[in-house]
Image (cartoon, rainbow, N blue to C red; front, top):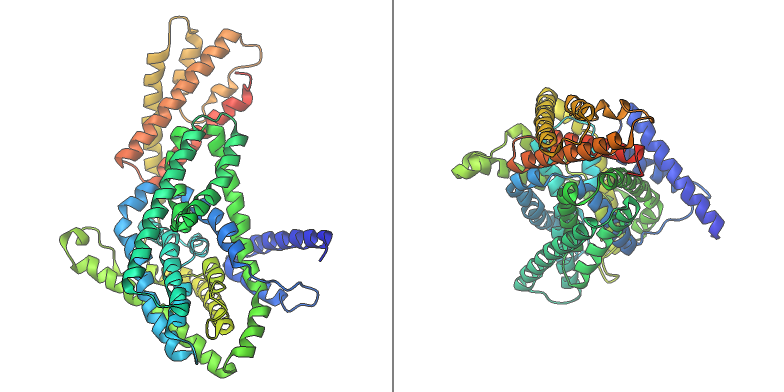
Length: 523
């Protein structure tokens, strides 16, 4: 394929991704599931090029920015508050799934070794952050459930990839439980350390940058830097990216300019949209090649149907068993856990939201060539991804049947208004402190009146206003905006408001500060 043809296919690929996503969004269908189906159908059409999965490209080129985009938008406060639940799912559930699905695969698939079965189970064990977020975006889940599911899907990739590496090593050589445990500890410690170090260094540099373009360039390379450094040090690159993203998302309001933060939100939303949806179309385009390999090495159609059903059932059963056992532990266990317990209905919702995606597809191609039934296992992994995405389409129906309380929009509105009022009070206090006798009284009076968010002061001054008035207004208004931001960050640190109110307030402050910079760039 020449260069022009390759570019044309890439453009068509993006156009189809955007068109399908926009269409199914309007009719309420699951975009990931629809893209997989469209890609699968297209893979059999004449003229469509044969797509080959390059696992290194996905793991090193696509996965880091996807995870980083999800991590910078998460609330560190919420993750910290739900850390025990997230760890039980991202570590405990992955290990439990590897054991259950591993033995099920060993019993169901002819000629597969136990080590290869465990490797396959590690491949299908982690839920996908992109698929889970896309599925939850269409239903109104309680905020606690959303945080747990997002945290699980971000962190369980690290556990699964460590389990996969141990299983792959067992295929080609002997391994010991002690070696596996040590490898896991090293991967976690190094991954967390590198993530924090990269996040700290990048935040230090961002604090000294004044150009949004340079800031954007720096953040674009951050996930790749964190991933590569961690992998070179034999740590978890996935964990390093997630930790760096969480750290930078938390620190952004204090180190980056308002213009840089606005650009960051828009850029990463665009990148995440294109990558996360394109990946599912790419998964579908692999169907023909995977199916041909499965036919050559598989036991036949009907045995394959039974094997697929058995593995999917084992995957679903292991998740439901672990989540419901965890729910029971929270409700009947020690007092500290009972104080943080969730309802059985929440437990069912968490158990139902178990979509797989890009990590599963990429990881299964990391199985060595010597793996028994390798091509057949690749086909089974594809079936698991598609089945979980289609099953995720039923989540809205499950949520309606569970009668879970949706997010309390009225409470969020009340909190947002209260937080805005608190920030306005801080801004007026800063105005009183910073105003000098030389500042025009008219400027001070108008700023005091319009000390809210997105204030009308931008429209009350024409081009004929005097330079002293303009300079005084800009100086005082920027001080007031900084006081507002400080008040909001203090409220977040003290945990007095939920994250939606915090995010809304910070975005409003950034918008007004960006508007000031755009209207008066020379100042």
